[in-house]
Image (cartoon, rainbow, N blue to C red; front, side, top):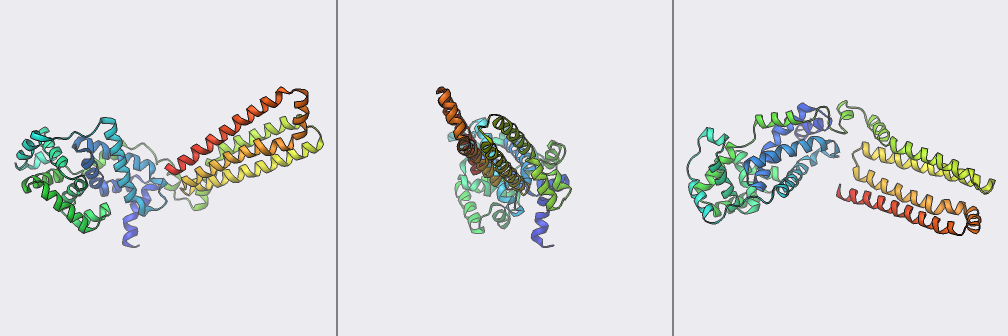
Length: 362
């Protein structure tokens, strides 16, 4: 096994529902997640809440990753999104400005005791917030992670997908803003408050029981055929409902058919509609099983449009003679029929539009 595959194996196993593997994933990435959360929130307690929320969402969404190597970029973006959501819920981050910032920054040269580094007091937390607010936004993640990752610019560059030169440049900008003693104090705070084994245990304790949604079959390490079968079965509810609705509708239409020619046409119509429904639902199940959510959503939109064409165009053409006879006998039926057709087309268009929007945002 290559070094790269060894690094990815806990992510792969976690996506299959392996809780021990996910514990290893949390331990390996908790400093990265916590650092991004702290850089965005400016508050230690909030950053810990955000980080725990990130890993809970990661556990639920890991099975949707189609390429394990995309895990790190996905985790970074997930952390930033959850931090933005957190800040919107709580209001903007508290910024310490003016005289208050000068006072707190001036106090920051006092060394931290080891015990205090683990449990920051209110004053130290305020000093940390003041220092972070003073830094350029692009430097905050780099500074915190630099100290939490053993002052390794190479490791920070790898975790944040930056060049080492970019990392060093952002560190230099931070040094240009803060006094050396203040930056050392920020580093001590960052090191002393980095997530540890206790944080990872808290995350694991908060996980829901069982494998993540979509991960239980993978946890059994079923072959591809089993996954495909599971995906198809997952779309079976919609398929059965569609076939039953098609059967019920066919019976009603046959009962009022104009002649035997229309009955044969209706049976051909129902057969084609059933084949189309089975094909699309099967493709949706396959796409879902392979983790291609966007493809499944687009197929759902295609099914909605196809349903509109079948019911709104093809079926009325098959029943043209009966419809003309009914409209001659009851002229108002034409208006009612047009109204129903408009409602049907609107419903199909809204359904298809919603699914396509979901595919774009997925």
